[in-house]
Amino acid sequence: MFETLNEIGIIQQLATTEFNRRMPDGLHISHFGVINHLCRLGDGRTPLGIANAFQVTKATMSHTLARLSDRGLVELKQNPDDGRSKLVYLTARGRVFHERAIAAVAPALETMDENLDLEKIIAMLPTLRELRAYLDNNRGA
Amino acid sequence: MFETLNEIGIIQQLATTEFNRRMPDGLHISHFGVINHLCRLGDGRTPLGIANAFQVTKATMSHTLARLSDRGLVELKQNPDDGRSKLVYLTARGRVFHERAIAAVAPALETMDENLDLEKIIAMLPTLRELRAYLDNNRGA
DNA sequence: ACTATCTAGTTCGATATCTAACTATATCAC
DNA sequence: GTGATATAGTTAGATATCGAACTAGATAGT
Image (cartoon, rainbow over all chains, first blue to last red):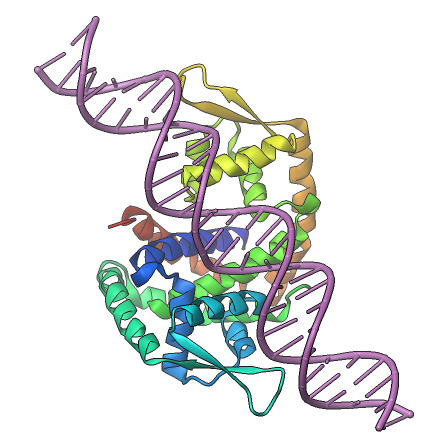
């Protein structure tokens, strides 16, 4: 178990560093993650909802969204249904960034698909999801 | 592929945060990693060798070792065979820390073993190692 | 032997993340 | 309705990590 977690930690570190290098405009993969989430699943989501989707703290998401907002890639509006809350919307520039980021990363992903046994990698997904769900449900326990 | 990497990233984040909370003396899991490495495989290794084992930069390892040295958990000596290099040795306090850290983390790992399908998790190891090796060999490519 | 290149380690600046403390709004109990 | 508790988001402080620039020592080519 420890062995597996260790391997996962190293992979994540290598992958993150690699993808960060490829991100346009000096942005971080976490920024892409948020934009990608909003593009794929639709915008108008709350910061907390996005934080939970990525399993980061709301403080971290607040920071990430502030950066994205500074760059004009997203816009935060008051939630009309809840005075405490905000809703995050993509801007036109945000959608352009999404396209460019995908283009920057896609070649590396394709090369990986060609050089690794994709079937085995996809076969790990259910087990990885179980592991994630367990860790999520037992936080701070 | 992206899906899998994303899942791995989230697992690593949750696991790191969780284990960091459990580390004695406010130390970080990366500190434990180094001490554990030296305990299991023997000390008297170079900083760069340890950095490569964990796939972090030498700058990061320099920082980590400085912290461990401040706390008296390791000792850095000049390498008699190479004037540029140093060798890292565990202190008695370092070995005590190792015992305490193991004790702090073991229950959580055991609970995981009981609640998850350990066989499937171990079965992922070869594929994870391939993935790690690929990323390692294609850094900055 | 000398010079150019490579390697080991450190230092510096930037940044993503965490926890903890704070503000403001919602909800619930009575 | 009013007060206690819970939730959304922000801010402050700490730290691990990275890349780049630097120093010092080793190695190779001529």
